[in-house]
Length: 358
Length: 261
Image 1 (cartoon, each protein chain N blue to C red):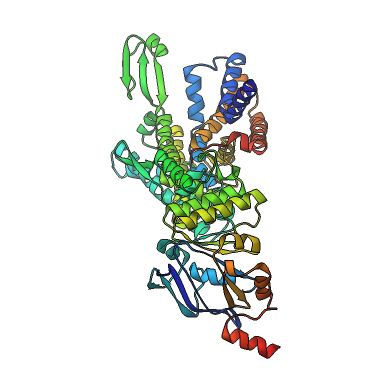
Image 2: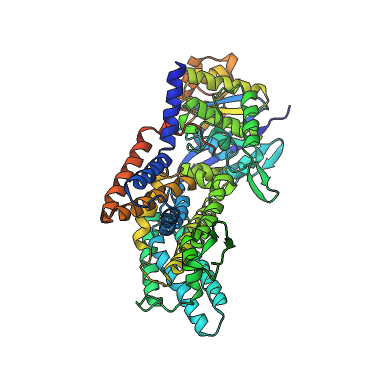
C-alpha cells in the first residue's frame, strides 16, 4: 500500500513537471544526435532566438489567466520596432548623441506601446467586446500604423551602438586571463579571440529581468491573486471587492508592454525596424502559454510554465536546424506537443492540481 | 432585547406586479428565522431588498436600532449582512484560504519593500475560523474545485463569518446537496446561531427549516400571511398557510379570505 502510494506520488510529480522533463529530454536528444548542440554558444542561441516568444508569452500569460486572449501582440512587435527605430534614426540625424537617441527611442516605443493595451482592456472590460475580437481589431490597426510610420520600407541606418548593445554579452571570460563585465576586451590575439567565452547575451539578460519581475507579480502579489480570481470566477472577484474592470485594463496593458519590449529587443537584435516583425511568433507565444499549463478558459497558468513552454519551442527549432531538417517540420512537432499538453491537462486535472498555492 | 434587523412595511413592485406587499419582520441576534412560501410568494424578492439587490418602493430597514438605507450589495456586506448565493461566489481555481481572503488579502513586506501575499497568516486564520465552526476540510490548500457542494457552502459561510457578518441570508442552502451534506449544513446553521449569528433561511424543504428555525414567516402572493413559533405549529398547518387553504393571521388577509369564501 505504501509502495502504491509512493509510486502514485512519483507519477503525479512526473505529470506535474512533464514540461520540464520533456525539455531536458529534448536537449539530451539533440545533444546526442546533433553536432555541438550542447555547447554554451548553442544553448545561448536558443535563448536569444526565443526572445520574442518568451516576451510575448509572458504578457499573454496574464491575459490568458484572466480568461481572455490578446492577438494584437503579433503586430504590436512590428509597431514598436518601427516606432523605436524611427525615433532613433531621426534623433541621431537631429544631432543627438547615439546613447540618448537609443534611450529615447526605446522609451518612446515602450510608452506608446501601453496605449493599444489600454484600448484593448477598455473594449474588453468596459464595453464587453470579446477579447478575441477587440485584440484582433487592434492586430490589424497596429500593423497598418506600423506600415504608415515606416512608409512600407524597413527602417535602416540605426545608430551603430544599437548593434553592440544588442549583440553584446553580460560577461566575457578568457579562462585564466581576462574577466570583463559588459564590454568586450580589446587587443586580443586571434587565438585568444577564439577561446574567449561570451556569457549571457544582453538581450537575454533584459528579457529575463522583465520576465522575473512579472513572474513575481503574478505568483506573489495581490495583483496576481486577483488575476487568477478573475479567470476563475469573475463574479466572485467582483463581489469580493476586486475592481475587475480596472484590473483587466492593466492586464491588457501588461501584455502590450511585453509586445513592445519584444519589438525593442527585435531592433537591438536585427538593427532594423519592420512592420511585420514578430507577427509569425504570435501563435508560438499562445502555444508556449498553453504548453506551460495555462488553460484558455482562464484561471490557470504560471510564468515559469510559460518560460519552459517557450524554450521547448526554441530548443526544438534550433535542434531541427542543427540536424539540417527543414524548419517547416517545426510546425508539425509544435502542433503535436500542443495537443499532447492539452490532453495531459484534460485527463489528469485533479491528480495534478489538487493543492495549489494561489 | 433589541432586534438585529427590523424591516417595516416593505413594498416592492415590478411594474404592475406587487412582489412584496407591506411586509414587516424582525430578527434577533442568534435567531434563525425561516421564510416559507410557494414559488412567486415574494420570499426571494424580500431578501433581495434586505441584501441591497433591490430597492423597495416603500418601507424602512433598521439594523442594530439604526435606520439604514442599503443601496447595493456591497453596502450590505459592509454593514454585516451577507447573502450566501447559490453559485457561492467562490473562485473554483483557487484554494480554500485564498477564497476566504479574496479581495481582502493579508499582505506582508518582502525585503521591507514590496507587499506580497502572507500565505501562512491566511492559512492559519482560515483554519481558526473553520475550527470555530466545526467545519472539516482535509486541507485548506485544496482548490475549491476539488470540494463537495456542502464543503463549498461551508467555505462561503466561513468567509462571511471571518469578515464579521452578523446576519446571514441563505437561499435554498440545502438544495443540490446529498443527504449527509444537508445535515452538515444544518448543523452549521445551529453552530452559527449558538455563536450569535442571525440567519434568515429560505427553503422549500419544510423539514430543514423546522429543524433549525425558531420562528417561521409564511408568505403568499407577496404578503406575509402568518408568523409562527416553530414549536407551536406543525407541517400541516404551515402547508395550509403556504397554499392558502388556511386563513392567515393578519387582518387584511383574513378579511380577504372571508370575502373570497
